[in-house]
Image (cartoon, rainbow, N blue to C red):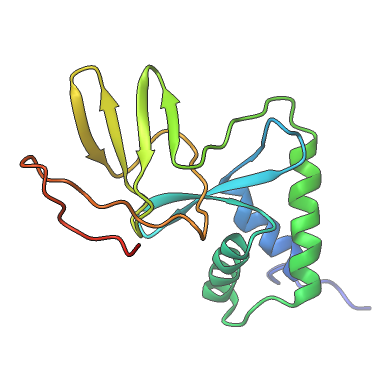
Length: 161
């Protein structure tokens, strides 16, 4: 008679592992009720991506690789994305997603489009650069970084035209 090993670690499918990775992040449905987004932690800042985007797939593949020391299979990735989208479709609350400019609690946030996902917070009292804006701003490949202005009004970086 064979008895199961009481100390054996259960083996989960790659798709299940991928879904569990995303369970630790914020997944939400856009107001169009068609697009599912995830806001994920990357190098100390938050990034928001459509779950079917290349950016999100790269992020989840990196997370999986860090755990399993191999990339997920393409079918497992597609199965996980389908599960994530199906779960999100059952959500009753939707959240707006912004490109570049968002309003939050009477303040305006302008996404700088830089690698750190910083934004300019504009209030009635002035502006400041923040590294963790409260609104979901989606990265777009066609959005180039804005130059940062110092107090004298001179650019500290340049944008190609």
